Length: 121
Length: 109
Image 1: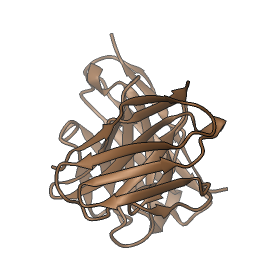
Image 2: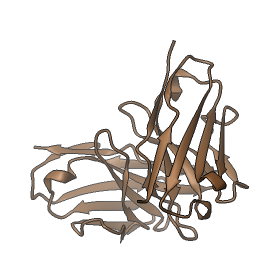
Image 3: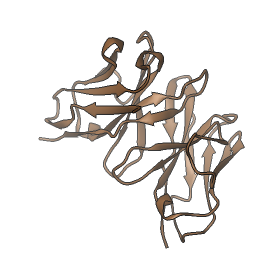
Image 4: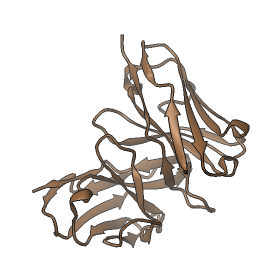
């Protein structure tokens, strides 16, 4: 089955760190660009970060730049998000999302179920 | 960066109704727009890409249209499983980013 499964969420104090993981299965993970997208409770969707299939190209939203680091291990079919200096406003469900296959098709065709990150003292 | 607005922000409709949701971009984006459906507690699901292309497995009662700055998602005959929140999404090449609209919640009248 083609799927993405996130893990690593939880409760963390402001200023703390957390590492999210996303395990991919059922498709050739190393061929796809990947992203993290988050959704604060009761709010809309916000793109967080992008990584190319090889890991050589990375982008971040301004809201997380300098604090979050995206990475991937194609041998382990896994995507990661290292989150440091966490703030209350980072509280959200974090989804990993696969880029739609094809050149210049910047959409998300496969999503995980998400993992909840709560930043609170 | 290009911003997206959606209207209405919410609507109430009955099973069998024709529903139309609008997404407007702050600048022209050709046909580079997608629509997603999200049900409570679930991940978003891609419905439409490139403004009018139906994603595989999505029922044909969903359709998309538009180009430039104005886009529409239409549900031709609303079904019970269609009550959800719908988001439009586009891509900015510079600076690199993805933008979602604020969402339109469709609930039962």
